[in-house]
Amino acid sequence: MNSSLKLLLPFLLFASIFSCVQSAKKNHVEKQMNDSIQTGITINNLQGYWTCNEVVIDHSNESNNLDANEQTVLGTENWLIKGDTIWMFQYPCEFNYAYAFKIKTDSLFYGGMTRNLKFENNVLLVTDAAISSQVMTKKFVHDTFDLKTIEMLERDTVNMDCLIGRMKIVKRIQPEEGAAYDLKFPIAMPKYIDIQSKEQATVIYRKRTITLSINGMEKLFYVEKIEWNNYNHDYATAFNDHFQHKHVITIHPAEWWKGEMFSVRYVEE
Image (cartoon, rainbow, N blue to C red; front, side):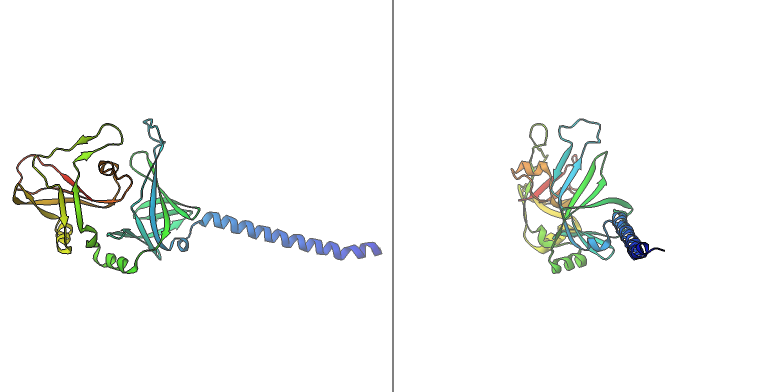
């Protein structure tokens, strides 16, 4: 072996070792990237409080031809994710459900349902197929809730303070399309319902009944539905109060009423 080759040999050996090291590093980085893509969002990413502040409904797959393919409404849902459980609330009014969940390849599985997950600018996008051919995407952001309120909702299910206040009858509807119209009832219904105490609120929520004065006589009504933080375009427009969360109570008369059944809605004033 000549002297020139002897001098080059260490350099060639070093270059070979350096090339192997760089190749190993590249493979390791590519594996990490692939693992990140596969695992995407982890359970650890989701821990804590979340508020859905916006819902985007995509109508583009529907057969009818709408002027706008997307509709955006306010969200009304709150999540507390602890470990592998999602606690779902209408904060600060009601606890709804608790589901164990799993995550796999950016999909969220809970309650027999599958949702697609994606982070975009610190916003958690939860996408599912809604009614018909619409696709609904809920946009969640990290939030902070009062711990005592959460503990109370987990214990009692409902915060009766949310029901206390004045409710106003819904008598005029303005649909998103078409002319406004008035609602007609077969009896004179009170313009307002005043819920003044937790005791009264408890009867409405637990027993699903309320007593109203009809033509000077106390009459029993059944509570069909209580909607917390409801956003309904018709209700909002009726009070010139667009895009605001409102509580809505729907009632109908009890057995004393012998005519055709009807329902009346009262919305938080």
